[in-house]
Length: 202
Image (cartoon, rainbow, N blue to C red; front, side, top):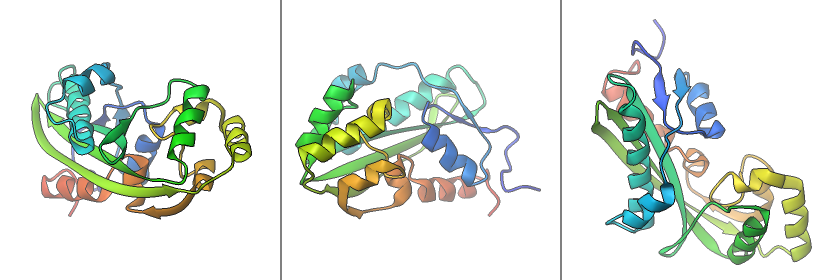
């Protein structure tokens, strides 16, 4: 008997390679089925506009969208917001936007709010959000230009314009919070729920 006890793999409603890798490294069989949603429109429609509220809403919406296509399957949605206070930052559209965003974040502390939701047959069975705080060092324009050049299009793949598991770590002077939360998937609360619900060996 393996650690995963369900008959079918977990469905991940995301294109995120890092989230899929996190689940795979924890011995959870996973299939990625990206959700086709308009994230900016959903953010605009949120009744709870707080960074945590938006992260959870996006996670739930993604999971519900995929669950509607896959009856009977357990679907995991996840999303992340970046905020300085209550000001939300969106994923940069291109390298120029990424540079401008990183320039505005340097020397400051921001918060990553990582939300997740588990859905089956249209019902939300679990949702959670965790927060990590990261302080960027006051790097030079020269460094920023070199970072954008070295990172290339990958810097537009995440909300902050960085991946701390790669060269993005060079942006920071202090990081406080769970590593998996920073990667966009609060893994320990997810594993605890999956064990409690009988999907994982306890």
